Image 1 (cartoon, rainbow, N blue to C red):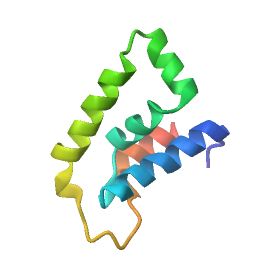
Image 2 (image 1 turned 90 degrees about the vertical axis):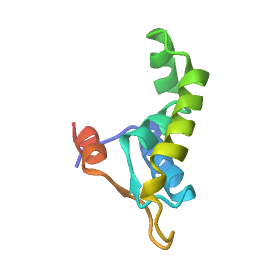
Image 3 (image 1 turned 30 degrees about the vertical axis):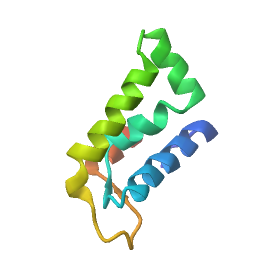
Image 4 (image 1 turned 30 degrees about the horizontal axis):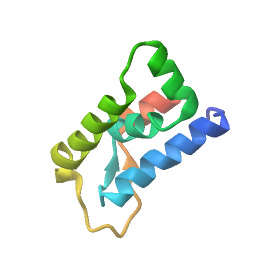
Length: 91
C-alpha cells in the first residue's frame, strides 16, 4: 500500500466524504479533484499552472451535483472509490 502525506490522506478522506454528503454510492475522480482544490499544496500547484481555482471548484460542484446524480444510493453505506479513483491512488 502506498505511503501518503498527511495532507493527501486528508484529501482522500475528504473526497469520500464529499461523495457521502451527496449520498453517492461511489467516489469518482471528480470528487477527488474537488477535494484537492481545497488542499493548500495541491491548489498551489494548480495555481502555478494558471488554474483558476474558484472557477474549477464551481465547475466541479455543478458537474458532481448534476452529472453524477445517478450515483445516488440509499445513503446507508460509505461511498466506495471507483476503479479509476483507485488506479490514480495506486500510481
